[in-house]
Image (cartoon, rainbow, N blue to C red; front, side, top):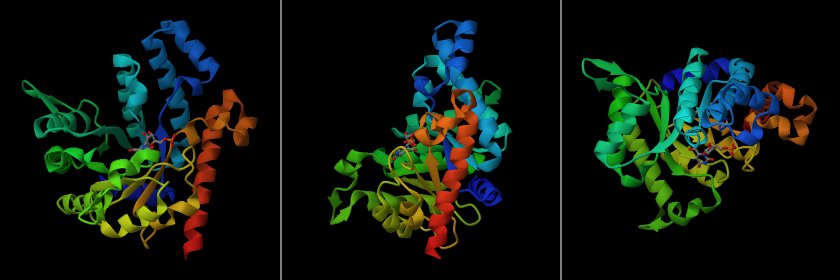
Amino acid sequence: MIDQLIANIKKTNAPIVVGLDPMMKFIPEQIQKAAFAEYGETLKGAAEAIWQYNKGIVDAVADLIPAVKPQIAMYEQFGVAGLIAFQKTVAYCKEKGLVVIGDVKRGDIGSTSEAYAVAHLGKVVVGEKSYAPFDEDFATVNPYLGSDGINPFIKVCKEENKGIFVLVKTSNPSSGEFQDRLVDGRPLYEIVGEKVAEWGSECMGSEYSNVGAVVGATYPEMGKALRKVMPKSYILVPGYGAQGGKGADLVHFFNEDGLGAIVNSSRGIIAAYQQEKYAQFGAANYADASRQAVIDMREDIAQALQGRK
Ligand SMILES: O=C(O)c1cc(=O)[nH]c(=O)n1[C@@H]1O[C@H](COP(=O)(O)O)[C@@H](O)[C@H]1O
C-alpha cells in the first residue's frame, strides 16, 4: 500500500493528506438544514450532514491530492449513524482513487489488537463468508502496549497489502510529558522510532516500508532526528495549519529524494471558508475554498522544499 501512496504522491506532486475531521460548526447551514429536513435533528441527521459536507470537499479536491485521513472520533460522536458516515466516506474516497488513512489510533493486548486490525484493515470471517468492515488502506496505531499491540496489525498488513502509521512524537502541547522522557539517556520517542524501523523492515514495499510513523509538524527538530532513525519509514506529519506548523518547519521530515513525508491538514482545509483569507468564497462555496487552501498548502510545501536545494 505504501507503493500506492507514493505513486499517488508522485502523480499529484503534492505530499498532502486532507484530514476529514468534520465538526458541526464547520458544516454550512444549507447542508445542515437539508439533512435535518430529511432525518430531523437526530444522530442520523447529523451523520447525513457530515457525509454531504465531506462529499462536497472530496469532489472538489480529489484530483489534487494523494490521500485523505478521516478521523474516526468526529464520526463516532454520532454513534452508529456516525460510523456509517465514516464507512461511506472511506468507500467514496477509495472509489475516487485516494489512499485512505483511517485515523483510529488503536492498540491493545494482542487478541484485541487483532480484532481492531481486522475491523479496519482486514477481513472478518462470518461462517463461510468474509467481510472487510471498514477497509481503510492505512490505520494509525498507538504503540504504548509494545509489540503485542503492533504485531497483529503487521500480520494483517502483510496479508492484505495495507499499512500503519505508528505514533512516535505527537503534535500536541503535552506530548513531551511522556514521549520526551529520557530512558537510558535517550528520549522515549527515539526508542519508539527505532522500533518502527525494526517493525518496518518486516513489511517493506519497494522503496519504503508499509510501517510508517506519526511525527508532529510542531516539533521540527525532533522530526529531523527521527528522519534519520527510520530512513525507510514514511512520516505522517500532522500539525500543519490550525496547530501552527508551516512549510518551512517540514523540510527535514523529507528525505533527499523528496519523498518520505506526507503532511496532514484537517481544519485548515475543510473549514477554510471560515478563515479570513478565504472568506470571499462564502459558505455556499465552502468546497472551492478548500480547493484553494489545498493549492496554497501545496505551494507552501513546494517552496520550502525548493529552498532546501
Ligand atoms: O495521528 C494523527 O493524525 C495525529 C497525531 C498527532 O500527533 N497530532 C494530530 O493532530 N493528529 C491528528 O491530525 C489531525 C489534525 O487536525 P488539524 O489540527 O485540524 O489539522 C487530527 O485528526 C488529529 O487527531
